[in-house]
Length: 400
Image (tube, rainbow, N blue to C red; front, top):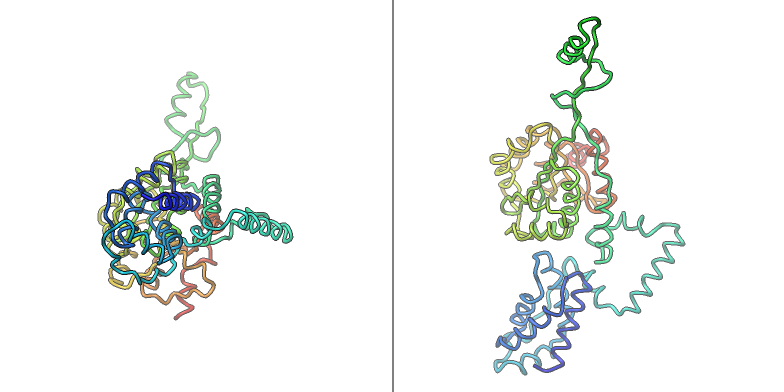
């Protein structure tokens, strides 16, 4: 293979690594070897050969697609390349490039010259200093979908350090206390017998307080792809500190990933979730997923005052009647149902979609989940009663 193509593949791998893909020299060698062995005749074949060599996780496929369309966008170069390496002509030399999708910001940043990026960072710092706003405060309100790869790494660190909710509920079991209102008869009698009955020594007890179980139902459809990884990062930290956390992912089917998220390393936990789930970034069937959860899992995980966090945009067009029935059943089975929706990041959001209107009457709290600030508000909401400012009835009255 010509040295020019090998150099270009090396430069392409470096750009992918800057965009967030964990690539090393071995992946570059595998890609060059595969291109030498494979007799490809189209840009699509070239794409999938490099995809097989560079992509190891499902969430990296979108970044690779954006980087490929940007790096190999010159048609004449690709046609010349294929003509040199293959005896067959390209099948579609005039194919139009794909439209940019989510994640293009991180890819574009990876292809910018280093000097230009340093100048932009310097300008951002000067602007932040001029407005007396720290970078961390700016990052708190930045939309997850608009973050660069560096900002996403910083956001993951902030999520790992985030203060977890201190929500406690009273249990039916009791614990010993020094002073209290409830007398413990058995301990009082034992203490009295030890002293020979000369005097009555009272012992007290009080109901135990413990964290209620948290059950997370996360939508992993294509419309939620920009927000799912960071929300799973939040659930990983919650699972690590509080063991009574159950996590379910759903697209077209329901998958229990609680054991995968219990791994200590967050990257390893998210990778295990990606391997376990087969319908990542695909379609969504919210009603059917909730039906399976209510039928198979509700009695197992929704006891002892469980709180359910539903992570979805609610864009369900088919089976709206089933969705409403399953939402009502889910609401009756838990102590509190909190719906977090990234669509609330828009100021002009209105509950006009059929799926949203079917779900809202059976929700206790309706909140956004598009930034670190919104995630911090969710933590505060877990340890406080439902707020009137996030009452779901407010959104229904707007379009009534």
